[in-house]
Picture 1 (cartoon, rainbow, N blue to C red):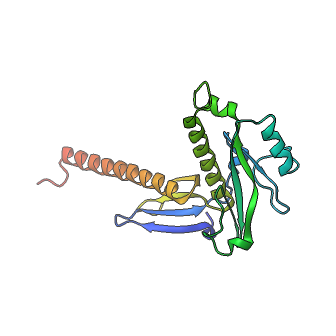
Picture 2: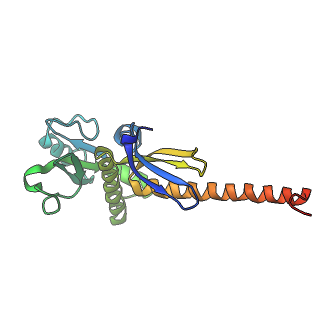
Picture 3: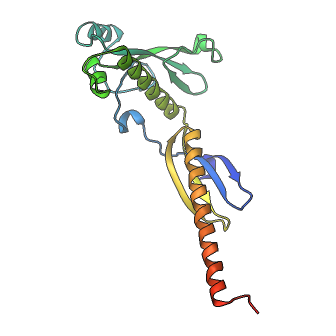
Length: 210
């Protein structure tokens, strides 16, 4: 793995180490994964969100008034300043120069029918709507991690300096660290079991006895 992708390295007292790297080949979650929401964006320089046939915001508004009645809809805002970030909340007041470098780029929506189907109800209730909104926000957060370059992976290195485990495609460093720590615990236990078995075999054959 190229050193340029290294985010941080954790050295442990027992000789193990974990390296966290930016994923050099991240998957676009909007193209690779199934989603409840449809992300409708327009931007003159960036190709954002999902493929759609709406030519402009007016046409999308007309869709919501006619075919899309009852849909769960959240706005999408883009912040373009030394990189880009997307959110369902305005960046104004929470990002540097957001008054000039941010604005609404579209919406993410879930149809009424899909929301009812997804959460196993027969009608649109307040609870179903809350669940749909939470799901849409999570999808936007995932996509934001992708466009910010925050898809990462880890390498687990044993006390002898060899790679013993690695995994990639984590959206956010926190999730990556949780998995890496779980892997470290597993291999520590496996090594301890091996060392204990060796000592038991040596005891059986009398090695070290007088």
